[in-house]
Length: 100
Image (cartoon, rainbow, N blue to C red):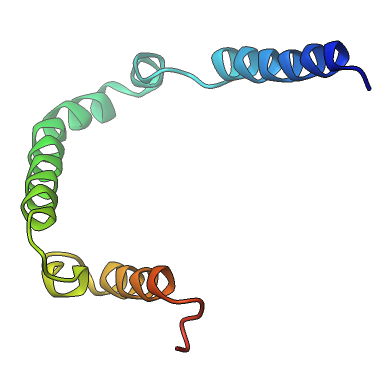
């Protein structure tokens, strides 16, 4: 396969992917307009609470990243399932196997 043919094929595949993404996936405004008025009002009421939770988590992550301690000693604010995931991920990252 020639280089030109490869470039045209890759460009075509990427173009189709972008086109499908913009035609199929709705944006947030379109989703909110399709909701019932009750759900839309509930979404607006909870928006501030979700933003505060996100900001608190981000502040904690930034604070934890400044420390030299291992991640499993710093993530007391995560739920147990996430804590286990982080610990396993750190072990995999540091070794070839989780059984080391």
